[in-house]
Image 1 (cartoon, rainbow, N blue to C red):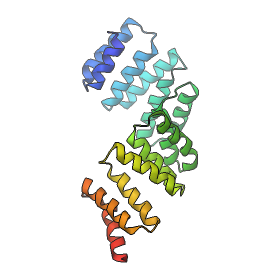
Image 2: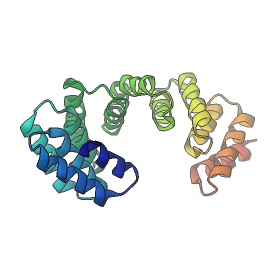
Image 3: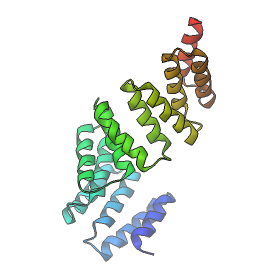
Image 4: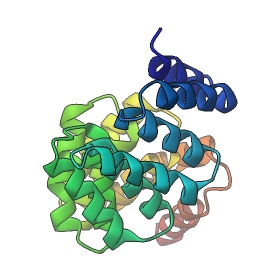
Length: 217
């Protein structure tokens, strides 16, 4: 098996030490392969060494400035450190360099939401869902973005689909409850809040919203 493939397999198993060895061997075998540097960076990031990971992504870009996955990986690190402007630039560059992945569209959309640009985020989150229809979290974030833009009916469709994919998604139930409350369907709203609380008994927002509606009845 190719050493990069072997390393990816180890990473999927959570065996980062063996993954690092495999990627290091891949780099030694072919020091001009940007993929091995990106993979090694991913291992470093997974174990919390983001600073060193970025150096490996930058090395990959020195070898090949069109290595789209390196821009995406740097973007992820920027996002986790709340550097949203930098993250946005990285995800956009990854897209321009040809990375047509659901994950890149999702992260770009999420970053734009963090930058209070929900209207601009919407098409990217929509595209993410189109590319990976089975991603419950992408459905949820797309629904949330629709709700923020007051597209309530459309958002409810996404929350429903999210729950189909992940019946334990408490926040999707909560947001469905809020949507039903907005539509003045208090019975259905309480049903959704109850489901959120069943999944997550300490869901404070659902508990508070349920009491609020009950007090108004």
